[in-house]
Structure formats: C-alpha cells, structure tokens
Image (cartoon, rainbow over all chains, first blue to last red):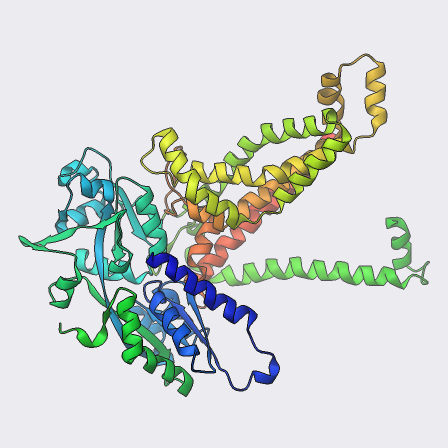
Length: 287
Length: 294
C-alpha cells in the first residue's frame, strides 16, 4: 500500500511539473528547487514538496540517486538540496571543503538486517553482528551455520556510496566502506534491494525500516547476549544501534525559498509527513 | 549520384549548391564522431596515466584506491557473445522463412511487427526481465539466484532478435529474383536455393545486421543493469553467476562520480574501452565482408 502511494505521489508530482510548467510570463515568481539524493529520504521530500507547493510559487523537483549522488550533486551545483541518509564522510568533507556544505537533519531512520521471508519462517529470527560479518566476508555460506535451513546464502550488498550501506557496515565492521568478498548481488535503491530479496528465498541484506514488509523480514540483533528487536519502540528508547539521521544538505547559506522549504519539512506539518513516511520525527529522539 | 556529387565538389558542377549542404551535413556527422572519440580519450588520460595497463588487466575496482576494468570487459564480452550465439540460429532461420517462404502479404505484416518490436526501448525489456526472467531462470535451472550473466545474455538475445531478424531479412529479400529463377531452372529445390544461392549472396547484409545487433547488445545499459547482479568479478567460465558489464557499471556509478576526478576518469576509460571494442568488431566485420565478396 505504502509503496503504491509513493508511486502515485511521484506520478502526480511528475505530471504536475511536466504538464503544468507555466510559460515564460510566470517564470519570475516561481523558483525551481532541485532536490536529489537518498532513496530513503525521497518519500519524505516528495510528499513534503507536494504539500509545500500547494501554498508556494516555488516548484520543487525531487529525484533519486543515493546519498553519495545527493552530496556530490549539491556540492557540484547540480542540485539545490542534497538528500543523504548518512553523514558526510571525511573524504567528502575534504573534497568539497569549498562548497561549505550545511546539514539539516529532518528525521531519523533505522537500518535493519533483513532476510527473505522463507528464511525467517524457517527459524532465523536473530543474528549476531559477528555472524552477519562472517556472512558478508564469505566465511559463512550456508544458512544452517546460523540456525537456518540447509540452503546457500544469497548475500545482497548495496552500491558503495549508499547511505544505508555506510551505517550498516559501520555497525557490523566498524568501517563504513568495508569490502565484502562474500557478496553475490549488488543493488542500488531501497526498492531494488527489497525486490531482489523478496524474489529470492535465501537472501540476506540491509534495508531501512520503512521498506520492511511480509516478503522481507527484519531479524533481531544479538549483541553481547542481549536481543535487540528491530522495532520503532526500541529505536525510540535509544536502544537500537543502527540509527541514522536523514539529512537535507545545502551548499552554503540557501536562498530564502529553499530555506522556507527546509523550514517546512522541519516544522510540524513536515514532521507529520516524516512520521507518515515511516520514520521518526527529529524532535522525538533522545539518544 | 556519388560520382556526380564528387564532380560537383571538385569544380565541374558549380550549379549544384545542394551538394554543399550535403557536404556540410556530412561534416557535422564527422565532427560528432571525432568529438566523441576525443572527449573520451581526453577524459580518460588521468586514469590511464595512473593505472597504465593495470586499468585493462586489473581485477579490483575499489573507488579511491584502484580501478581495474577486467571484470566489466569480460562481462561485456561474455554477455554479448552469448546473446549473439543464441540469436543467430533463430534470426537466420526466421529471416530465411520470412523472405523465401512467406507470401508477400504475410511478409509485410510480419515485417511490420518485427520493426515495431525493434524499436521497443531497453527499459521495457529490463522491467520484464527483472519481473519474470530472473525468477524463471532461477526456478528452471535451479540456481542459487537468477541475476546472472546468462540471464543478461538471454534478455539481450530477446531484445536484439527483432533487429537482427528484420535486417537479415532485408538483405535476403534484396537478392535479385534472377538468381532464384536461374537456380530454379537448374533444378534446385526451394531449400537448396535459399541455403546455397540466396544466403551467400546476402552475406554482407547479414553481417551488417549482426554487427548492429552486437552494437545494441554491447551498449545496453538499463536492461542489463537490472538483471545481471552488478557484482564486479571476473566470472571465469561460469555463466550462471552474477557479473557486470561496462554499460551497467557506468549506469550505476556515473551520477555519483560526476566531476570527481579519478573516479570519473575511470568511468570515461570504461567508455573508451567499449568504444574501441565496438570499433574493432565493426572493422573486422567489414573486413570479413570484403574478403568474402571477393
């Protein structure tokens, strides 16, 4: 349901921008705001954009691409707002020093270790970080080694610049750009990874909480003997370890229209959208 | 026509200004080709300088550390080779049947459908592939996962079939009917005429059709990207593992690397490699045609 809704919103947005673009007479009043980046932040941005445009002459275009793309685009001047589901890395900070990137957190998300529903049903309900590390390093190759059925593991990784991968690998390995020789498939967006894991009956992967459904199940993390359930309740209490901020990024001080949009997302209406999109409003979190 | 224009260019027919317009258009095309090549070469200089031959022979593509294109080059060659291997028998028999056996009213309808199919964009095939083919391949072949080099090659074969078929058919059909009549008067059967008279005569056209098919298969980005698994790994001789092609790699990383120095240059290096691979194939294809027509 949620996914279809997002699709419709995207379509409406696309059509309203594509067909309704006003002719030159109107061009002075509306500013075009380009928003590019993380597919995790995208649902929030596109819903907020739709709401925001009802009462503003600015036109907002929201595009996917991943956190890396978001940061690179805004630093390179190809977008006004970059979306990122992770912090700016040291390397990027150094490279884009001149762009004076500013970060505006708009919400919170958590990343879960997910498995195909068949594996979940077969009894794999929890994994230790060491087991997950072993799987991604190619040392554990069969589900029966971690209490599952006798089936080879389809290890699904993400493109290296993706925000979800950064925070996940940071938690599992302590290194955001860890190499994973056990990988079998590399995917891009959350949607793509969700689809590939759902199509398989023996896959493991990493997904933002908002993408978990009946075909793609989140497992608990067993950290030092303590079971951490992958639920929003755990996140709210500050006990879930793989949490990240969803960020808007601008290069330097933004123009007033762009600032207004960011303000809208951080305001009460925008934060309601954050919650509706399956994330946690930024104010509610005490780490 | 060619000779007339040649004379116009060299002075005898000054009364044909249209010839100069044609020449200018031709020059635009020439500029595009040269400009594209130059752009790729210039952009890939940094990576070639820092990696040398290691760029073509390296097996690891770790952004920020080392760039080796071998997994992508192997992937492209394997996937395209597989697609052509699967397409050739189907396309050739289909073309022979359409050209030599079908009555002309049917032939026109079949041609229309083929040309329509040949224009379907890659993303449509990609979506069909990712929805049905990957799952089908996995179940039928009992594989660990359906996102493999084989799936990509199979999808490309389906995708280029209409192009190769319709162009081969054009080549077969354009063989003058005198050849067929002469062969018939010698007492050859229809099958013998098709195989030993019409097919050899149309060989250059068929090679051209196959080359166009290869070009499309090698350059296809999105359809391959969705079903190949996108894992940078030299696949060895196993078709049933995930891999990566040059265009799928470009599709995954181009936006992120835009304007970021060596990473961008490495991707341009990949583009240049693909450009050269297609050029070499076309060259040998033409050479083959010239040899065989002598």
